[in-house]
Image (tube, rainbow, N blue to C red; front, side, top):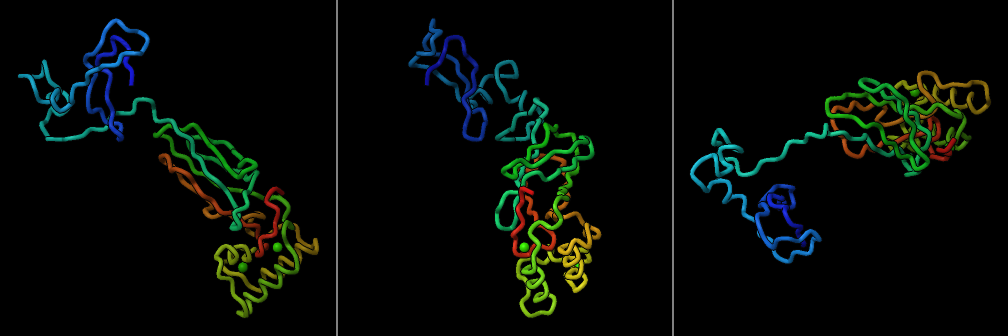
Length: 237
Ligand SMILES: [Ca+2]
Ligand SMILES: [Ca+2]
């Protein structure tokens, strides 16, 4: 470590970002950061030594004498942050171009990028927003007779889905469970007899909506193409 001249008072931090000491001396007349010797005072000495508040910290940092042994600093930057996350299929394939409808203290539409990632903001800690994930493109994406056959086996209890996303994907009328009615709807969509799923967009997401009041960390969202229970849909479409 090297220390420039006239940096007295500079903090010595521990791994938690807490000040444990302060620079108070060393070599002098050096402005090139090459000083080999510097002295830090220990904070706990500065805390309680001396005779009163004019020459120690205790009365300033713990005025009610609570006995506190560590204190976090105050963030005065406004704590701006971005809501960041990733959207992928159950196969881990990234889903680009998902519309992320942001409402509340910010009203805007964002999109997931080519890698399925999104970044919304900046937001300050006093802002609240709701996110809704929407993708309503190419309703026939990934649909084939194989999906119909797999859903048929699930509905007739011959070979039931264990994957909860497949069960959700098969429920194209959003009734709460897959049934013969969903099969009929998917068949009509494949045959171009029907252009929409009732009650849903072409893609479903879990979670579909997220309310954010503070930095939620990395959000993970899973998307599936309705009707596509073997995950053959091309997420770029
Ligand atoms: Ca259904
Ligand atoms: Ca499929």
